[in-house]
Image 1 (cartoon, rainbow, N blue to C red):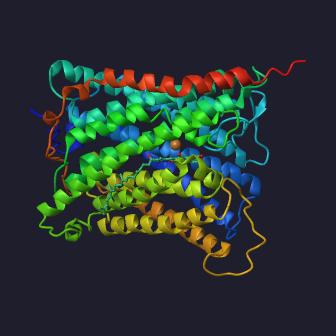
Image 2: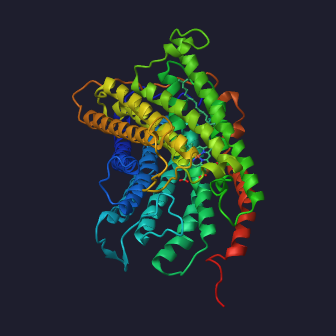
Image 3: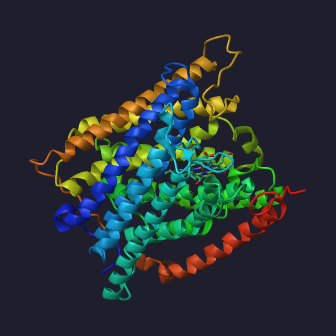
Length: 568
Ligand code: HAS
Ligand code: CU
């Protein structure tokens, strides 16, 4: 049997009712975070553009923190654990070895989120309460590095959340080990392979943020240490801060590789290429984080140059993905009778919201990828780094490539997780297209605004020079941004309504569509070493040491572990 025969012919919820429940709970957490985060998003868009100001400017930063944390940490990662729980269970055809571990990680992640959320939301109170001797607040943005300081509970919440994800990874590794002893010599089924490689990348990278918080930021926020070395904690943050974007992206890639070819009417073009892509992410995701610090003083230009080179190599797995996924879509379209060089595009199932959402997300990702290449260029980065261009990049990438794929994936998965037919397919189709339109308006404005120097991370980007209202004026850009943001918010509400109605649509006949055909070129066409995960871990660690040992030693030798020694 080849590893790609991960058929799920019967409804998932009937084969694994308790696992479907875990996935549903994780998704529910994700979608609650999505709703709150989206509300904060539209408030920001309207505030920045001065169209509607219902909060004071200082509260803008509370909202900005909530927007970032709820969307890129809670929404994305809760969706990830739900999807991965489904992928492992479905592709290995077995339940976790010990459900207590499963409940523990879900519990840790949920409690951690709640604690961090309370710390953030306290920022809305006129007089936030004192907890543990300091005022409860966390206006530190989702990049929470020093010198901004949050209440200790914020960091405690984050730590619990991350420990939860580590335990989830352990749970999935255990399932695989158990499966391996029952199936000696078999190739790892592709979805499980994707889960395990993602988690290896996550273990290697999240150790950076864990060190930053536990060794430096938390003790400093508790008042145990008086100071810290900001360059050191920033560098540790970005050591994790780049790979985390792939932690959001790889579940979307899983859907593009596993589900999208099938929705297109065909089969995955190449299983070996998919494996190579995920391995490249293990190797290359981490030794690039300093590309977020091109403008930081205290890191030598030479180190930055090396990181720029690594980043350009890191384009490879995404370019390979563009090839493999589009080739699979084309194969599907031709199975459906599509012809011609581009004519096959019209044969794709554009009326299916799950398909259309993922395809549009991929299209937007191509643009976001190109802007990522701009960011990665050391000298061009100086132009865009502190500008609205970067939020433009963020919203095409995690805000659409990932978020829209997750929504589209939900339309495909939900009937399998609940046994209920999806409510309002045509509304769902409208919802994904609305997202696409909204993001085009919003990011077009952000990219162009960034190029003319509009700053990011500020509540008050006003300009005195905007004399004329017309194409290219600040007013035009502001209106586009606000319009785009509003459409995205409406689209989110529609999505949440469809999900909610589907959950209660339990007297319906579900459409069962879980059977995923094997890849055109299966795992047997690739060397077995691809599945030897230890080899890739070892190489990844060597690369990390090469990329970080010297810069870190340099930073510590100049600024000290806990900040510069300023004693006389
Ligand atoms: Fe980035 C900043 C470089 C990818 C997220 N990035 C950010 C920040 C976030 C973020 C959140 O080098 C801001 C952090 C902050 O607050 O400061 N990024 C890159 C590069 C890539 C990249 C080189 N980023 C992502 C992804 C993200 C993400 C993915 C989230 C999920 N980014 C940077 C840099 C900065 C940065 C600098 C620092 C900026 C600064 O100065 O602060 C690459 O991984 C991109 C590779 C992608 C491609 C596209 C391939 C195309 C595909 C499409 C296939 C089409 C399909 C559909 C499936 C080369 C795969 C076809 C449809 C049909 C109809 C046929
Ligand atoms: Cu990055």
